Image (cartoon, rainbow, N blue to C red; front, side, top):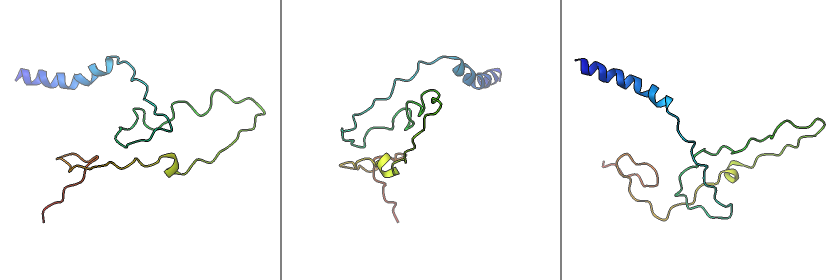
Length: 105
């Protein structure tokens, strides 16, 4: 009985131990050249699609007129990935890069 209580206490304390350990920062995401074609098989970037640098660097100087530029449309800013040459049938629990199996009727 005591071993069950001790195991429960360790399970509750495990997240606290994990937070105390320092982890090395993740490596910077690989950037592909803009002219390289994408195949659609690469995973999303580690940091997501957020810009790596802030939009403004420091405080703007007084008297400088900011210029505003309209954002490109979503289909141009985030083009869809190229289709794969072949889509195998999905395995149990798999949903990406495969075709859904038809359910028997």
